Length: 392
Image (tube, rainbow, N blue to C red; front, side):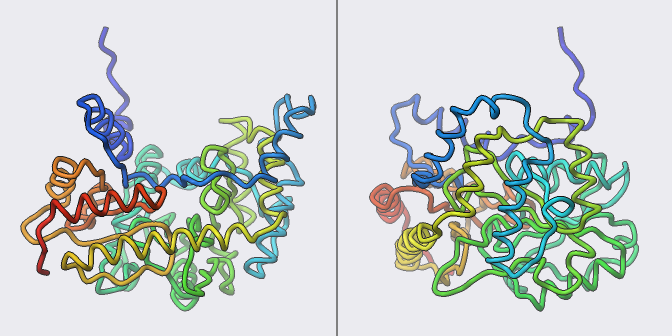
């Protein structure tokens, strides 16, 4: 029997990384040793003291029951304390922090809190696909904000038509940025606050990569800017900072009304983070942070390897100051898809075509640095031997 999918599902494109995983599986079935530089999933282990805290919590029967949807107060307090230490931002753990089963879940659910069918959501292009997909599922209309190299991959807010801005309910931002690796200043965030205040827009800043930064750079939180808490919330998690992607522990913080609305929605849809995981995440936030600097040093070494290899082939790339991604233009004569296909066929290496992040991603590809150095070096050598020197 064939069942007709709801229109909201028909409107969704296939999820980018599901397609990548399928391509990898097909190659491996043919005996190809595939090296994937596609998905940004840290390869290094979760810190030992975090695992020990999780094991301890697992043995406590009190943690075997339903958790609080909003999250244990101890977990939310750990988030608030971390924000105070890291960014100088004061948060009320009871009203301005809500736990998430990974930040992706909260990002996808947020439009359901504020977007009615036909409402506009401002979405960066290129950008993390969940911003637009969550909007579509809520019945909203994504309006894409072009991120271009000429503007440092920042949206030009002055270019948003007045009639669009007046219809917009939510705006997604993400700095340090996935996929471009771009960073944003407090001055830019101040412009965002003024824009949001003028049009009554809720700003949703995805700050997942603030701790993956290099060469002395310390990315700011959107909430550091005066007035930001009046107009926005910020999403973050322990995933990238502490190599905990599989643990699914994140949070949204900031504007109390928006945080409470998201918590109210979640209370009707899920049962919160497993408490043993909350204890582990709190241990990550409250515990020693030296491992984060060590992690960034490893990513910096990998970044330099990839950039130096590509520049040796004719690219003219600057080294990104944050994230574990390299965003690079495809060689002349190629589309994003054709170049990704060429690299997969000739080198057995998976790179992500820029179009997976939106129409403005055409002409680019993304490399993830979440692979051990020897394997990453092998991928670079394969690319070096199968790609002719390019001229841009």
